[in-house]
Amino acid sequence: MHIHILGICGTFMGGLAALAKASGHRVTGCDQGVYPPMSDQLEALGIELTTGFGNEQLALKPDLFVVGNVVSRQKSPEGAAKYPLMESILELGLPYMSGPQWLSEHLLHASGHEFHVLAVAGTHGKTTTSSMLAWILEHAGLQPGYLIGGVPLNFNTSARLPGKTDKTRRPLFVIEADEYDTAFFDKRSKFVHYRPRTVILNNLEFDHADIFDDLQAIERQFHHLVRTVPALGRLIVNAQERSLQRVIGMGCWSECEGFALDGHQPQEGDTFAVNWLLSGPAEDFEVWHERKLLGRLRWSITGVHNQMNALAAIAAAHHVGVSVEESILALEQFQNVRRRMELKGQVALSASTSSILASSERPPLVSVYDDFAHHPTAIQTTLEGLRRQLGDEARILCVFEPRSNTMKLGSMKALLPMALQAANLSFCHTQGLDWNAQEALAPLGERAMCANHIEALVELVASKTQAGDHIVCMSNGGFGGIHAKLLSRLAGHAP
Image (cartoon, rainbow, N blue to C red):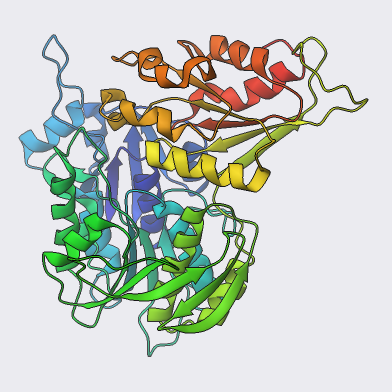
């Protein structure tokens, strides 16, 4: 069929477009911001892109309009529709559906090629864990398909179809299972459409304050996901999360295996047992299953959160027949995901950049990293992981922007001082915020600074940078290209 995708440049919808094209469909699409790298990727696939949501696109006459959740019925103060194409689709009674529904009905569970879907859900770590799981399956020769909200460095693409496999087994498909709502006309979480047979529930805490009233509302959506898993399916659940204990307590009709850190103590009210344990530091730890030591993973990935991500991926791969030993061999070669503590560059400070230089003849370089963290918990775990890796003597500078809808609302601003404790200095980009960031960060005293514009933020960070510092830039957006601007400024070039 010919599908026309509204909101095609989002990570999910762009990945869906690539999969649809690879499946033989004609794909066109539109978005308000048709820009690289997604626009380049889609055009390389031969997908025609239109800027904006104008009615002229009706002339394409697709068989179906696939609608991303960026589209709404919103109007301007003057009463004009923000998405006139959508208004015409509704007025003319043209066929449309959401991206997750199309993916489920026309690919994951299409007649004649039912996939075994492995879904990774949770507030944090979905992209990384999905990437780990897909790589484990690939390393084991199972040629999985996947749709991931990032670019795994082991693959260098965010989506692909499964390869040819043994006809006795269903093709495997790994999907990052998001709890955000599906579309303006379908307020269920995206993941209820996927009908997985293997599910990772990695963690669960309050997020998406723009659509969920409280944690209980999100727990209910996770329970809806649990309801879709067949009896012979399997749930891989973080036993340390009280919220997930409550989710499983609402009802579970499938196999359920818990995972946790060694030393985890069961609590009254627990609703499932711990089957998987890990023991040891993040870079060198043992994997236990049913009280049996099955292997030891030594790798370069940091952070306890990534240990837990790895354990969940190992357990999920085990459900489809991959041994723990094979999974460990794969993870030893795992290269992480773009924008997950990705080193963007290192630079020697120029004499004009900072008045504080090391006394040695060749001072150590300043390292600048890019990280996707934006929720306070993700910020905290990432910074703590880097602190453990570098030691107490290293200086860490955190440069962040509260860009997600939840953070813009200010509902989690009180958690920021604790989240930033592992950094020596923190710098907040405050443009577009309706709450006082300097006031929220007051518990950090002189360790926290704010700036309203990217250029001012770059100058502020540069004025405080010392040789050998580690600067971590955190945002779920492009952050105004701050990484390149910082590297240039610290080297003494004009911004």
